[in-house]
Image (cartoon, rainbow, N blue to C red; front, top):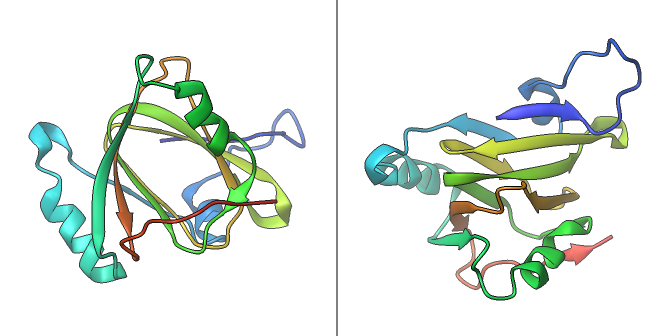
Length: 149
């Protein structure tokens, strides 16, 4: 995971840390995902946090309507359920509203588990590679709906 401020206040300002994410209840953990051995860790998280269902989503340059799919994520929005992503392959960028309403840019990659809590504004982009494969976890089997700002 790589963290940065979307807009730095000073040239010598330190990059944000996981403490800055924790201030807005964003959870991060690095997990082993080699050889698809991630399920025990996913089961632990599901049990501890009350998630009931999971799926795997993959986006890549050949995904039909990739631009249309990505357009739904690029605008600032929130959900009534947590947004949970365990990256199995590829990479992506979350912009998360931090304390003082500042954007924290979070670039996730293979092995990164990120939980954006319900009711926290954020947005998501693919990197130039245009590829990400993630486990998603949900508390409600119907998934979640974005609510745009």
